Image 1 (cartoon, rainbow, N blue to C red):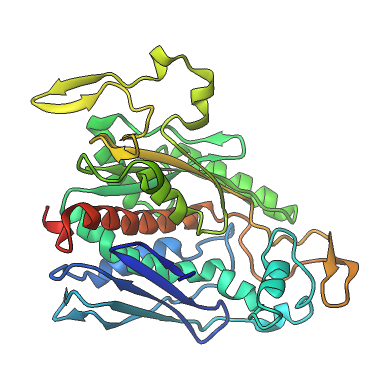
Image 2 (image 1 turned 60 degrees about the horizontal axis):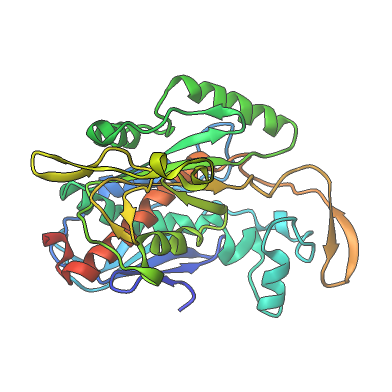
Length: 366
């Protein structure tokens, strides 16, 4: 199914940006997981717009769990989550319904669905749908934390502004916990204001900015994943590229491997109190497509938000003529802060799917 991710633990997304509601169906989750609704709300708050550098469309994101939970615990059946859309302004899209917004899915959606797609706010292609993804993923993020597996994402780079790197294995868990207690996901708080100032400057110029997000997954057992086409890298990349703004992914040292010698790039093994570790983690915790017990680390390139107020060249794909477009309405000059928790949520779904593949339906009892 085109809107479904996963083999054993599966999520299906539905809804449109300006429709009545959006939602997710999370299936394959083992019974007995405690549902912490405050934790889910906290994760949805991280995704919600905040401040002058993000969209003015602010939804309450009140969620309703319709099935799969009884007396505060998962039952083992499919979990259905619904989030209503309330703060919509569809009139912003009526005048440009047949004009392709550059770098958006308007034109390809029109061709793919023969003009029957809901174009308002991008319809099913909208980042609005990620709210349902975060709500479902939050259930698994909390369950993983209770098992000692922590997932965290920070803004590694915004234009020329860099955040510090994650700490080594011994302090990485602390980094992730600190990140997950922040609304603005940076490790070095001193770069936060510089990033906000730069994004504000870009927005005043009617433009937008992207960035690089770095994610670490701490506490995974050795042996998850398969070689070749169901590798850990492949499973994560398949899921993460489902987020429309992500245009590149690298694991460990990634493209920097091209500048290294083997003697530098190789992660040498050693023993620490009977536990196998590597002195470095250039391979991002994965060898042969399988987790090696070190933290899984990857970075995602996020493109600048395509909705900008500058005049741009385009086409009217119904009239088949060239035209220009000025995009008005409520849009983010940068989505890198908001997308961090989305990456955490989708990573949690993939991790649970990998755990279920190795340990079975009671995968959180390994």
